[in-house]
Image 1 (cartoon, rainbow, N blue to C red):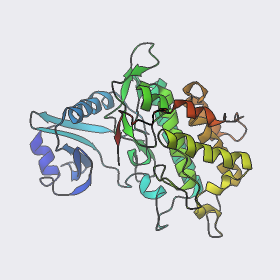
Image 2 (cartoon, rainbow, N blue to C red):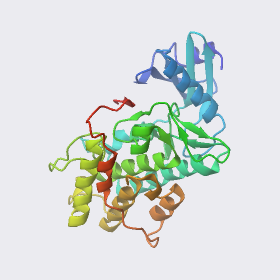
Image 3 (cartoon, rainbow, N blue to C red):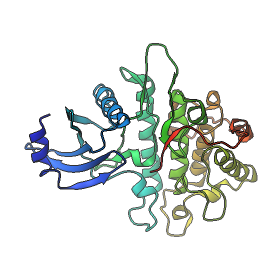
Image 4 (spheres, rainbow, N blue to C red):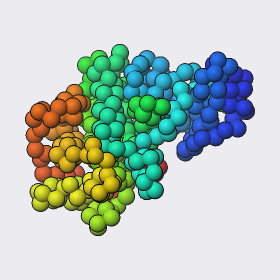
Length: 331
């Protein structure tokens, strides 16, 4: 796509709608009336450029209703731009971390969105022309269209699985604190089960309304995910609630209040929490594949195994208490 076309569509990049560590995002409109989101890199670091080409090369071969669509790109030595479809409903975290309680998603809508995200991941893992591990799934990387259909975005850190490969090893883990599977965070091992872990975190967030990267629950329970000691203690806290039969205490208060949506069903919430706990089990071989998760989310008759106690997470900690060398996003 020509630079002049992008510049004209965005009125010379005047309508900024978002920004991150390496890029800013602008809203624009093409001459045919199509609204677009334009991501322009402003820090051309090696990491940012690798992410740029990762997006171009991977999204170009992907077509699924639950994945963001790349319309075009521009590349020269000084400027790198990605052009996507514009999704007016913003990202999912806007609705889940909604402290004002305006535009809160009702229970049925949350479940529809969760199922859509799961279908998008299944496509990436086994149904697309190239098998892909996303490696940075989180609420802010799920965008919503007018019909509130979720689209997974940001493939800058994604990895491709070639041939019969089931895993690849990254030289360093690059992801977001709170969502990274332990084997990826510690050893750089990338498999589809790393995405399953992230999906479990996301699902638990959607049920609870609480940011996985916050350290404490409002009722003083610690949150359910994290790194190293956080990874163990927080999941152990949720596991303890599970054993005590109190795990529904984490459900978003919006649903448990007298004015909550009538679509909320405690049994379904309990089922989702159980699925989430299965997804965040310490060892990747214990986590279910996305195909099974879709069946569990879609049918109340589908049997769900009990999650294993997460005490073995303690074995994954660095006994010296030293910091990881992983590169971890802070937003």
